[in-house]
Length: 544
Image 1 (cartoon, rainbow, N blue to C red):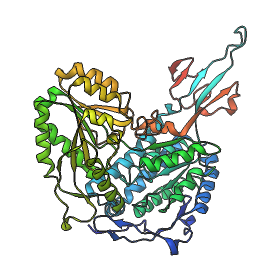
Image 2: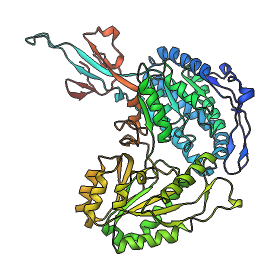
Image 3: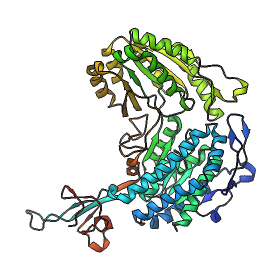
Image 4: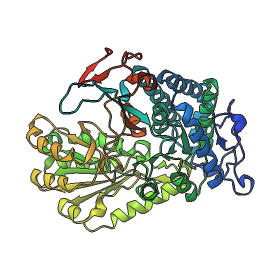
């Protein structure tokens, strides 16, 4: 599929503020710019993008700080209109965005189209959340001046936006976790201006999406500076953004190593700020005895499909399996060993990711006790560059528990199956796990007694527990949690997917004995917004 550019022509400009007229060339853009790369061919793509630096960071943050004063005061309905308009503008440029994203990621067109729909769906989820209004958590305690020994004051509390937010685009989701992804959508919904550091693997896609947001801001008469896009390949750019005094919170999806560096910078500031990072997970899958006995072959097929989805470049990829010895397991292993050989090598997102996968897989294979089970078909020149083969390994539970390195994520289509002697050892193994995003339990009714103990133990280690499915794929919904104990994420109390993501960008503020004229609409006595509020501990839509 050839690359096209539509109305939103790629210019390589730095977008400081929402209006295209405000766009400026990045510092030294002619001398030190960079280009996008097609990882399937290693060919450079059109457009030269600036290596933004500290000066652009400070310009973007200053603009966001100025915008916060007015943007945070917009009504929920006004911000909902903004999010809806962003979704509309993305649809206008769907063809150009999809084709550029395909070229920069080597992901199939159907995947990118689906991801763009997820992106617009996330925007609409938050728009609808704003229209409903109860997300602010309005809580009122009526006064009692006659209470003894001291009168009870009038107290009213709600969530308020933190301020400008920094968002880091992810490599593996050029749309849904990037410029207009969940972090940006939820922060804008909360009333926080956003400064995005685009991922250098898809700069053209980032610019096209950023310009859609810019057009939406202009159409909705939104304050200048509510959104900026910074581009660049340097580590210094991200560090400067996190350390900028005007940034009040950070959203990040990426590696444990890179995320931990930024987390430490955010925590070490003179004013420490929240850092919401999704860092890494191997997402343990438990295969219980009876389900293996009954469905070993179909489980093997489902596992391989999940393992190889998107060349294993999902944060929820099933990189760790746990099962007990038995006939069912032997049949499962035999089916996986045969099936993995039929898995074609596929292109990874970047040359760096492909190289890191090869090194990680080889390092895993070198660990004591790790046995090779099977690998996918060899890459070939006709298939393109930066290809990765699926690989599956086994190890005993004793050796796994003795080596913490075996639980670390290998980003790509690699998995390790841990073989336990019995369910007691499986439970012991579970208790020693580090934090993960998900865990999956495959079981039948005959497994229920063992499953109860496993599910209780694993729920302490993950953010989402699945049954009889595969973890790849995250539903964008109100009840979704995408996060988990460290190192899966830096704050297990939060989610980066679903309506609850908005809670990361707000803080509670109480008003005591405040005049009606200064109260936010959500806290006014007659409830002019008609939202659900908690009054004296009871949910109601009635006024006082």
